[in-house]
Image (cartoon, rainbow, N blue to C red; front, side, top):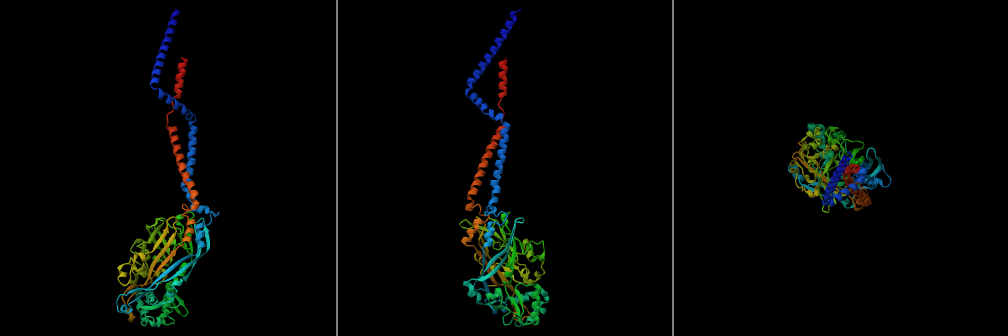
Length: 572
């Protein structure tokens, strides 16, 4: 009885031994065939031991690092632009006040030059017989406006700046002789504007109310021919020597009444007569209080008009409609520098025309540092929907002499006088105008309005606005000398308004313009730091994402199972 258990125990022992021997033999065989792989796997388990033990803590740390890195990345990519849009935090401690580029703008006197090219009628006798007027371009004179700004106030909340601007005229020395010289046979602008005022006030009754009283024009206009007159350019532009209606006869009383009713800006009522000046209105237009976007919050709007004389709207066009886009004051304000918009088209407010005009991108200049913009060809295309309000619904436009043909725009609603504006030499004008006069020589290169912009900061290095002022002539049966005069829109003069920025002024604007901060040498170390930080942040984010992916998705190594098996074997 006692030997059976011994044999049993012995048998079990042998079996276990045999089993272990077999297992060990098998493992040894397996290990011998996969020696290198087994050691490599064991080493990887050991190396991951640390990450497994502190897995959750490491994930939290990586997430925190990623959030901090993202914050720095966003600052470098986006918030960094605020630094030089706000003019390097206003460098002088002027945060919340005027940026440096406004200080430069207001500290300088801006000079805008005007080159005036008058026309005369070369065949006066033939026109009185019914032939087309033949135009001849006369001597050029130049004068300039000197802009002075005062009462400057800033509003950070509204992101705007308000100032008073006054302009004074000066004639350049080289054109002073032409300025005083008498030009013969210029169309008699005061006479024809008086006839047109008669149509405006009396309509079809103008024949009996006005024209009948002017059978002999000399009673009101003295010795001047009703078709043409002799003017010095000084008197034609600024008045002082064009007095007519010096007596208080019936026709002159009516003419005074018409001028008062229409509030014409080209006539000046005086005690001893009525004076005429083409540019009498211009200085009143330039003596303004302007409110513009300062660009502190929105750089692209810098220099764009918000208000003129406290008003956001004018009542000039479309019967004074407050919803009409034509009455909205908008666009860059005449010669404000440093507010360009890259390759985008933009509008420029022209006070003389009571409206903005569109400039469109054309090309880069040869040196690639400058961009060229030209005035839109369709500026005076009155058949376009966006331009209809410049001649729509106004009862004055029902008269044949102010039809809304393309290429010409009437200024009666802007100035109170029936002058009409076009491009020089009737470029892009309808045949109804170009076919009625002779002698004009349109030249796109010479007569097209252009703006040259410095690409790196948006400043205008050259601004050239060109337009032509015209007056209609027509036959008047009640005035015998004009009975055969053909209908025509006769050019009085074309004008080039220019702003030229000197090299020193350009350097001043480059240094402070919000568009040039990335190119300005003072910003180089700042931008190197920003761009370096962006690159470093991207690398850190990449590493963190890879580590998180490994920690979250990687399967845990079977260490616990191996330890358990070992314990079971050891206990057996």
